[in-house]
Length: 383
Ligand code: GLY
Ligand code: MN
Ligand code: MN
Image (cartoon, rainbow, N blue to C red; front, side, top):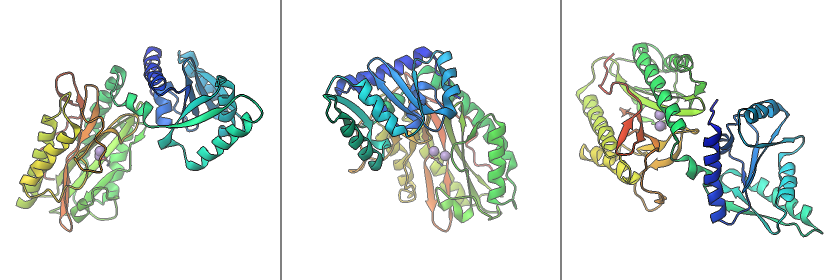
C-alpha cells in the first residue's frame, strides 16, 4: 500500500486543479487506476474519481467501502459514493448533480476511457439533461494527472529508493542462483520467489530469463531451454513495493565468455555508463538516449539496439519520461528532464541467432545531477 500523507495528497489535488483552471474545466473524471491511486491512496481494482475545484469524490462499490473509510480516517479528503449498479450510470448522475452551473465542462482522460464508454456517458448525460437547463459536456484531456506524476515528491522518492535497495539485494541473491543446466523457467521462478521474499507485493512484469540465442529477443518469455556453457543470459526483473515499481537487468555468462561476448558486453556497459553520466536537470531525454545510441554506434551496434534507452518508473512500470530517440514521429514535448524524475537506463544489443546483452539500472535526477538508485555489480559475471 502507498500512503501519501494528507498534505501530499492536497498538493497533488492542487496541481490537477491548476490544470483544470487553465483548461476552463469544472471537473476531471479520473478513470485511470494509477492516477486514482496517486490522488487518493486507493489501491482497489474499480473506481472513478470526480475532482472539482472544491471536492474529490470517489465512486466505488461495496468491496472497497471499508478500505475507503480507512483512507478517510487516515486523513484523505475525499467523499465516498457507493456504486450499487453501473459505475457509469452513477458517474452521469453525480456529474449532473455536481456541475449545476451550465454548461458544465467535465474533462475525461482520453487515454483511459474507451470509445464505447464515452458514447454511453455522452448519450446518458444528454438524456438526463433533456427538459432541464443542466448540461454537461465531456472534454477530452491528455495526461493531466500523468504530468503531475512525472516529478516524484519526497515521499515517492523515499519509497523508490527503498524499493531499489531491496531489488538490488534480490539481484545480488539471484546472481548466486544461476547454474548451468537449469531451465529458464526454473531460474525465473527462483527470481520471483526472491522478489516476494524481498518484501515486494508482486513482480512488476513477467520476469525475463533469456539464454543463448533467446537473449536476442528483448522481451523473451522464459521457457524450457537449459542454460548452457557459452550462453549469455539476460535476467530482467522488477518488483512493486508500497505501490511503486522498480526494474533491473543484468546479463551473465555461463562459463567463460567468448571474446565476442566480452566486446558486446563492454559496448553495452559503456553505453549504459555514458547515458547515466549525461543525466542532470535540464538535460534532454532525447540526448540521454543519444548518448547510449552513439556509443553503441561506435562499436558497430547501432542496428542491434532497437528499443528506447529508458522509461519512467513510479506507480506504473512504464511511465513518463520516455528516454527515447529523436525521430520525426516521437513526441518531443517536455524534452528536458528535471529533479525528482525517476527512470531506467537500459541499453542493449540484440544479435539474431547469436544472443544479446542488456544492462538496466534505475536513476533519480537530483538537484545537480544523478543518483543511481540500484546498486549491483555491472562486471560481466562468469558462472
Ligand atoms: N522488461 C521491462 C523493461 O525492462 O522495461
Ligand atoms: Mn527491465
Ligand atoms: Mn525497464
